[in-house]
Length: 166
Image (cartoon, rainbow, N blue to C red; front, side, top):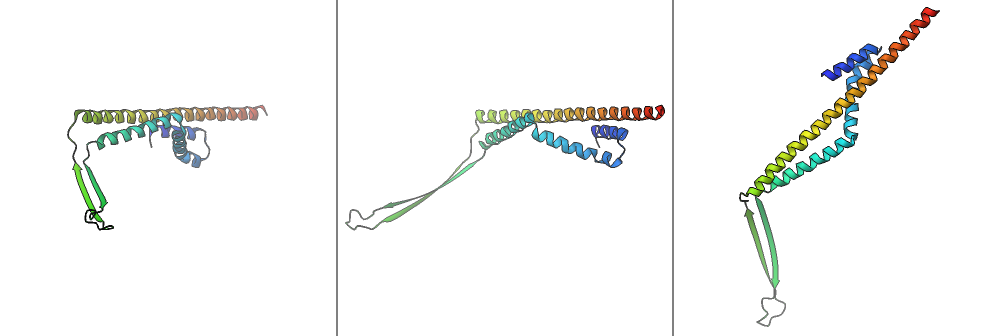
């Protein structure tokens, strides 16, 4: 269990009476983090940007792939036009197979390097935003748990004061 989940479990042990709710806290936090990550508009934009950079990277790499083209054509001609026989047709079928292997071009190579760099930047940007989202959520949950702890401590103090006053 990582450090933030241990911290949250510790805070729950401090104010929770039911140990089953403490054991379930890491699962709740993971679900909450997954929902926050899924619904965050900032992360949606970064996720779409990362997806776009992945497509750009693939298309830049596709320029280096060999290409195989196959073409089939059929033409009909009236072969006996000069002999006077009408209605006699001849079919000509032709098939072409062409393999083109790309030649090294500096511009293509630089485009691929640029796509690699853009993909690396977009990936780091997305991971950084995801990490920031995790820390924001951890801070919010930690603040909430501390507030609940303070409220529980205040309630216990009030109960103790009432017992003493009786």
